[in-house]
Image (tube, rainbow, N blue to C red; front, side):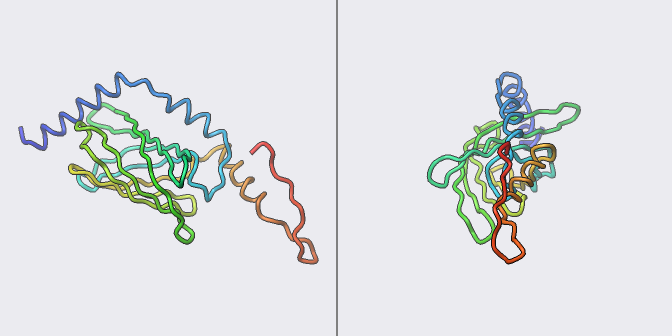
Length: 185
């Protein structure tokens, strides 16, 4: 058995064990956070999409919950799925990132040690622009891309209403008119 196959087997076995014993609050937090309207140009909130390994072509589902911390820092909690043979595994991890504005985009960077079973230290470099969160990741054993968008559903409709409520409506004489905001947002 090649070293690559052995490493893949070890990663698979470790993910099975971690998935089986982890007690996650991600689903509960995801459901609660989706009910909160988020401005479309915000980094904070729920995101969903895919991850793709450029190293081996593997891909899977990916969701994230972004929460603000102090000083331009944010916590990004990821929940990823990985299908191997007939099994579907999921795993979660948190990533602290630093965010800076760059024109119409938000740029973020961070790194996290996911443990020896997942490949050790991963670094991330990404952008958030116009409702798309895109990040490249790199580790000793893998590299690839995360691509996420805002989830669709009732909260998405409230998010659009929230963003429109912040744009002043113009009267016939060109002055800004008062606009009520959605207090449920």
